[in-house]
Image (cartoon, rainbow, N blue to C red):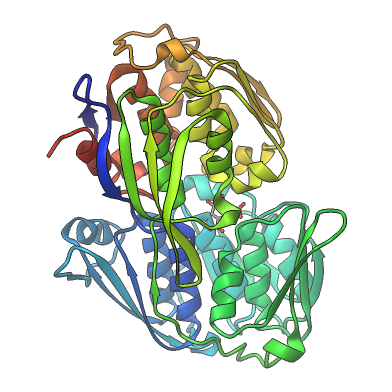
Length: 479
Ligand code: S3P
């Protein structure tokens, strides 16, 4: 399905909106409550196909999950094979999860299909590594290309076995032992998979990573009663420790997690598309309400502020153990910057939209240390470069990053035609890459240049941000 959004000339983006639930927090709220003991109510504005995949696989494993959803989400859930959700009275989503502990999970004869969702697949791998039955995990074309050795290797060292290190694979659980693991990548998915297996293991677990990746798992597990220690080494590495003596029962039943009700805030990664659009479209002034402001996710916030973006976070509060704010943003001129190291980890999902911002800044923006982007839903470094060049921006691609030569004069000119720096078939390649963040970054790019956008594939955008169009429609004065 294609969709077109047009701005009214001279009016910019204006108004107040909220964005769908934080995808990372919601995955954890679903998966962790599914292996907790008791009933939890998880509430969220709306969410996409990835989170529905987490619900679907937990139901396949025998967990009782009831859904009440707004009308649009109800259709999406049906498309994802969940046909018994109820219509909610307030258009919000609520998910009731009756967890029976780790030992309440039952084997599924059918493969557990994780769709496009790396977080579902990697966290589930950690949970199933300790269960006394075989499970097969599968995913869509993009997920089957992504690396799973990063979780297979430590979980094998803990005692589980795997039929391969790419999906689909079968996990055969063993009696899990503790591990002291030095992860070569800063990855919240790897860290979480090891901790979830660790909750079912008989010894202490320690994971170090080069930089601190997002810490939603640590926050939620602590709230569910797990004793976790975190520290920074002199080398800058970040360490998380789970002590068997203080936390785990050491039996195959696994640690008894407390069920916990959670109101999930809006996703900073979704808000990011609106922040960049509002900075770059003249006469914009936007308030995004109820957005997660977890420090491990705020790379883009510091980068845009450094570049000169007019941004303000107000109404700071703590909801469900996570910092939450309202974000105000208005039109501003940007200058180029350099992004590398830890900042890349804190902005890992925002590099596509950051690259859009860089395209309209004064000077050359250099992004380095971002090789992880090559193994996301698409090869994002390649797709970002192709997408920007299709709008006439000069980009140089490196193995671990990009140099983006800003062209501020491209913005707000309502140009219908730009001279692409790539062949027509390459333009098609980013539009057909099936990566939600590349398509949304491309739509914002088009909006800034042309005052309108066509989304080539709404199904893909629904992976994470099903109300993307609706948000821009509202902010551009549409109904
Ligand atoms: C996520 C972790 C990140 C991020 C992904 C969501 C999570 O991946 O890119 O979109 O929810 O744990 P890595 O853990 O692979 O860095």
